[in-house]
Image (cartoon, rainbow, N blue to C red):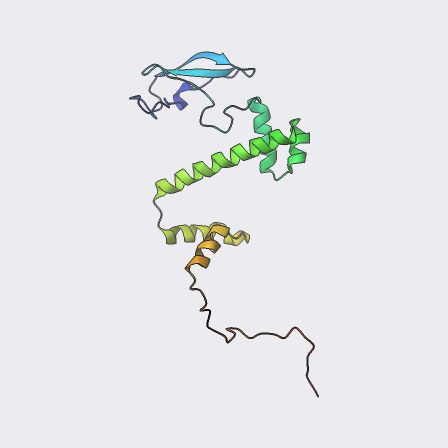
Length: 174
């Protein structure tokens, strides 16, 4: 079993004076639980116990960390769920569950980081243009926002706004 760096953990009790503060020396291992012997941690300041995997995509999953790492790595390489299941020895349902949890965790992490940057709308647009448009990827949410900003066409307008091509045969005579 690998050594756990307790300086990377903080108390998750919002009422604790050491809440969210790392490297305070207040976190200790009380015991191990489950078939994978997950460390159960305790805050010496408030006495609250919590799992070392709490707040990660691995919380409440019953796979060992090596297998979970393999599943996520194989998914990140763009393999199908079926290929991941065959390569790692997990079921397709488990591969889906790991993908779902990891993607939600990534999304929440990125959202938190973007909020902390305090970027303006135009700065986000510039960032989007630089990173994603060069790869030819369209962002659906921005398309939806742009569509909502467009003014609706008046219902009483009868003339076509754009030239209309006839779908029938051409009536051109020489």
